[in-house]
Image (cartoon, rainbow, N blue to C red):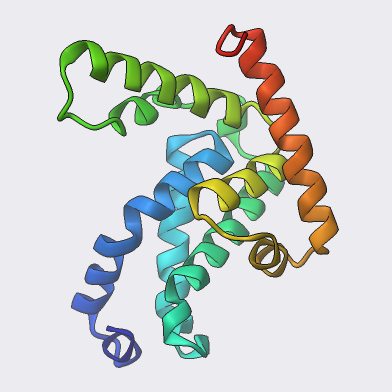
Amino acid sequence: MIERIKAKDESALRLLMDRYGDMLLRTAWLLLKDQQSAEEAVQDTFVQAYAKISQLQEPDRLQAWLISITVSRCRMKTRTWSWRSIFPSAESGSWAEEMAGATAGAEELFMVEWNNVRLAEAVRSLDYIYRECLTLYYFHEMNIREIAVQLAAPENTVKSRLARGRMLLKQRLEKEGHFE
């Protein structure tokens, strides 16, 4: 697929988008707290990946490379001011509800959805630096060293952000009555 993208085969780009699009969108959504901004960040990711695919040194690291681009695009979006910062998206909380599976019974499905929405809201309420580390660690299952490389930060900084993020997340969930 990478060779086809290097040859500017658009069908290979569509395949890449189908394979990694949802995962990158969930990542961007957790980091940006806004569906439209997340979609823009992912779109920017694919445009940049298509244009710079020749810079990918290790084809086995394609997913990590795409995540890196997405995280970078999300950082850029949080730094740039937009009219959307005044007018939040009407859909900002609806995407997490759609992410729950549809195979369970109605009551179980409702509880899974409710818990996923509450957890996503709690994560999104954290400062960006904590959301970023928690998302990479738990959602992408990266280890401390990989996150440090991804964020160009010292490992101890990543450990501190993870610990602080977990503590803040736990406090928010306890406050809402999720933990007793």
